[in-house]
Length: 210
Image 1 (spheres, rainbow, N blue to C red):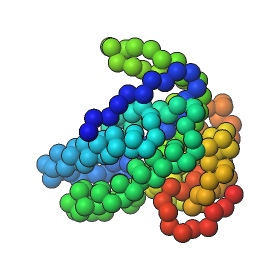
Image 2: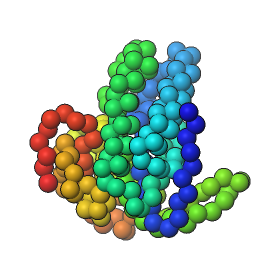
Image 3: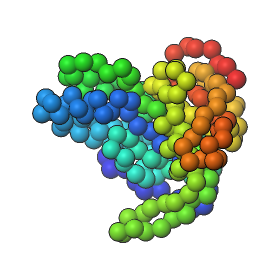
Image 4: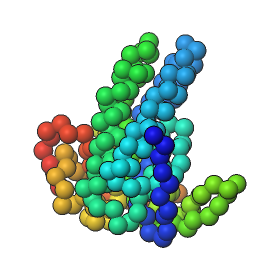
């Protein structure tokens, strides 16, 4: 199944995610001359994203080497957004250990996915005949994703989301866990503290905390 492009005009939700310990995984597979194993898994993940488009429309905008930047229309309902996020996590948690992890000589410290989410105005453009977008929300989402693991808590299957996104899309949902957190995001707000929410995306029965 091939995934579909969803036109994005103006306001959009930006979701960026990637794999924990991807550099370690690639290093170990390279030593074993088995990098194609990761490539095959990424192809599986791509197909699963195409299936999730049936649940909630989104644009699989850009593959980043160990994850994706996904763009959702601003009118996406919160439950639909959460269904996609949980769907990606569930697929990864089920398939990655069997398809890749079991072939590594050493288990990486952290296994899973981390997410960053923001909402904002995106400007569409064409570059080498491919759709491209520019906008602060992409920068913020990427910075949030890279900061999930700060402050010591295990990063896997967690997302950092802006307070605006949390209030508009997640506040009324039954989430596993929510924490108010502060982060310093590189080249954002002149180094000032950035207040956001950290949400858990794997159903584990943990108490919901606002």
